[in-house]
Figure: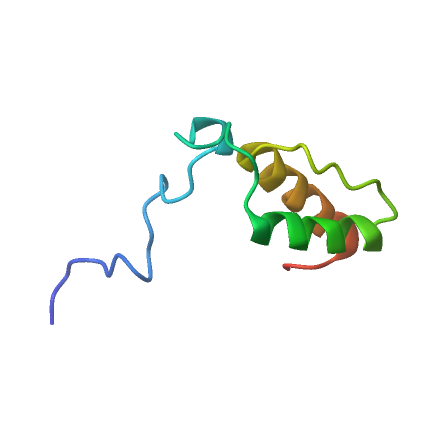
Length: 72
């Protein structure tokens, strides 16, 4: 048995990049992001902004998941 930690069970602290550091973060959000964000926006009774970038959509999804209890 190895003493080396399993990277899958103990991901490194940089496993999740800040969306603003994404190289494609300023591109238009993906179709999947738009679909999920629209659902979350409806559940949170907020307006859906179809002009968000990938990075901003990711941050808004995180925010709305907190409001709606989804993704917990």
